[in-house]
Amino acid sequence: EAQVTQNPRYLITVTGKKLTVTCSQNMNHEYMSWYRQDPGLGLRQIYYSMNVEVTDKGDVPEGYKVSRKEKRNFPLILESPSPNQTSLYFCASSLRSGLAYEQYFGPGTRLTVT
Amino acid sequence: SQKIEQNSEALNIQEGKTATLTCNYTNYSPAYLQWYRQDPGRGPVFLLLIRENEKEKRKERLKVTFDTTLKQSLFHITASQPADSATYLCALETGYSTLTFGKGTMLLVSP
Image (cartoon, chains in turn blue, purple):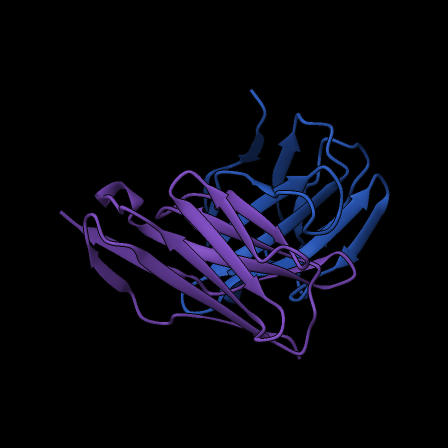
């Protein structure tokens, strides 16, 4: 089954404790991205990757890091999480970049930073 | 900066009626526009894509229009059903490989 998976689905952590949210897709997609979704603010793009070893900032990259060492994986790293990073996070992938291709979203990771 | 506006209030309609949702944008001329459905706590699901040279696109009970002069897209669900209740998002490409979503419109279909 074609899908995007994320882990963990739920995470409660404390300020400053480094964490990684994994994202994997099995569709051989070139483009992957991370979004956060907050009430009243909608979905906002954090980082995106157009292919292996090619990443770039989205609208809200501060406090986040990403890497794309393999085509299927695109982990999101929070080196020193803060409470304002409490949010619902989504990973997405598409065949290529741009809106000519539909985005496939993962199930989401709900992160709480205390 | 690019601004995308969708109906800010929830849209309540009766089963069987046509729901019409609006997506307005400024300061950009997108080549494509997409619509997604999102259920609470779940990831958005792609519904339709429309290109700038297409005036209208249909898929079953769904219809999307795209007016690049008005900078507006309309999303219609005909013969709406309670199962159509969800939040609907429009999305534009607002920079090189940067995608921007509207905040979404919550649709509630009553039996």
